[in-house]
Image (cartoon, rainbow, N blue to C red; front, side, top):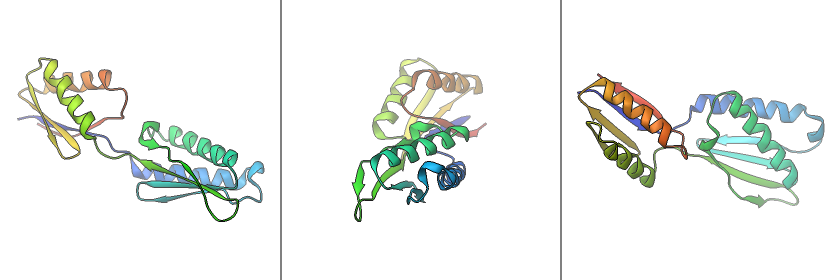
Length: 161
């Protein structure tokens, strides 16, 4: 029986490349000369270090630009609050969302059931598995979800025929 999974996860290779490009740009920009502005990545955490809140915002803008150029959806990045570290330095921890949350999964299942398409949707951990008899109905479900769910970046993988 044909099926696919609805997931929400960023391409971590592209994220790493965007972080590297952003660090390179920050190190060469004139307005960051002499400052300790940088971005560090640990798994799903991007930590921005800078001298003041204005520079934190500027480094974040550079990062967002690099992510957008690499086709990483900006809705994956969840902005954290700024924290003061040693002396006058600041850091901001941004997390990368991974997986379909419980509320979003319930919304996706409800949308699929309300559409009256002949498919079954089930929540399996942080993914939603959709199965159906025909490939065409599965493609209709993908089109429906792309149109209706705008608050989270969704991707569709593990397509089985």
